[in-house]
Image 1 (spheres, helix red, strand yellow):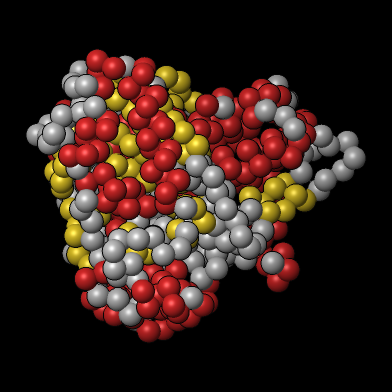
Image 2 (cartoon, rainbow, N blue to C red):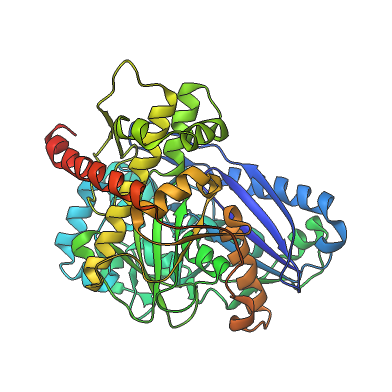
Length: 489
């Protein structure tokens, strides 16, 4: 039995995977998000551990026999977060998260200090990445920076609590702007530009490596035997790729999680920084991936549900019942509630409804939000295709994962907008936790080809020509809005 732990922005999800590759149980616990100032996003690491312990208790109660057989643990987590620790391993301040936009000025400073940073990291310097956050601390909280002895990513801080070892995997480390992504090693040049050295960094491992074991006291508290192996794991998107079986070049997925992602595996390091596409190491050895990321996806739909007082399920069902004539009259939505990455790289961008009228209601706004997120993902996929000189739609079907994947209306809109077949696999909402558990199985000696198979499709969505025509027309309006409003952000 293998345990996958996925530290998400809104909560921790745990999954038990059997030797038969079947999911035996899933549990989750929420984690609160703090926004102490506009554009800021923080969490207290202690809450991650408390949520993990709560989810462990749920799993033990659900499946006590399966739980007792756990022999490997894999970790997945939201990327880019900065957890700064003092000399005794104490957390010096709340973690600054991936969707925090305070470090925009520091991005320019870092690229000026290291003109080759894009070639080394495969990425533009963006406020959400880890390195600019440390530069921000050095300027704005110098006493905290001076006391910092180590910096960990969120899932790796959780690993430290469970194992006592400071380790990161290649995929998660790729999102720091301190990794030489082609060489899969820390860059001394970029670390020095932030006033840091390798001594501040965890050791590196591949996602499927056995890196350590659960501490004896943790194993005893959890009712597990000594020597439970802990795998390197992966950043949330790389782990999701493992979860859906995306291990070979061209395979990939679309994610409707808190953020939105288009992900494709590549066999080589292939930067495309001119269009704000990410190039990261995969959680599997010897592979990389390209990724287009938008900062608000399912979170934007959740935001609308909250302010309208309706459930996400009800809003989704209402959108599904809309005909194309009503859709054509819906407002247009820019989904930049937390700024944006691909393709704009603008932390100051904001959300916008354009074309609101008195006849519009919550259903029309929900349609606009789904469509706006879809248009953001279309922009990302087009940027990836332009970088690869592919053109046209995606040749291979893409898996659809994340909490938003539950919505048939949204899945169909995405298939038409992206001009590709989308397959929603069984357990799509828990792909990262499943990937973490699969990495644990590999760390315990399992064969990658066996443990990283594609999941069977629960549903399949094909582009619909009439819907495509409408979305094509509305996408042109969407794309015209951003440059028209840019000076107002």
